[in-house]
Length: 151
Image (cartoon, rainbow, N blue to C red; front, side, top):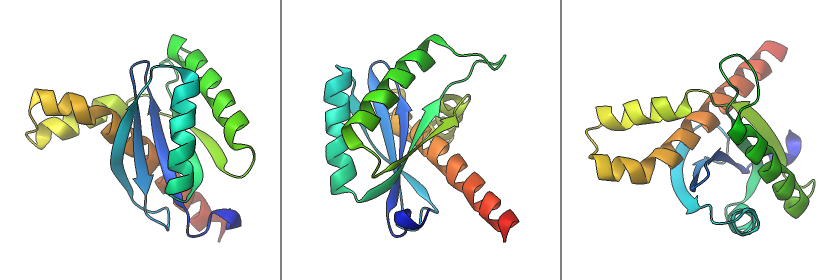
């Protein structure tokens, strides 16, 4: 991924109401919660994301895809595929888009927020971006391991 050098990665936890976002550092090593956007419509969400991609110097987008426990597509995964299609149409080939299994990211995010003693109301505001952070960090860690194997 030489074209992604010194560019951040954006993690996305797609939800029907909110889309959680996380960012990595410029070396794509560490993921941080960023924010969430309201998912009013696919076009509006994709438009907001394009602005973020441009503003934040993003070279990689990692989108969580919830695969069912039996390895099959879920109802939400069909919506996510529509979202991915719209996003790719809007941004073209200039940014790499990767899909990553996010089966338990929301559960991990919830546990993490509870362990930090964050009140229920605040957890609701943070859960989506924290879940996207788990997705992005897992993806980045996996990529680093793959690179180390290939050396």
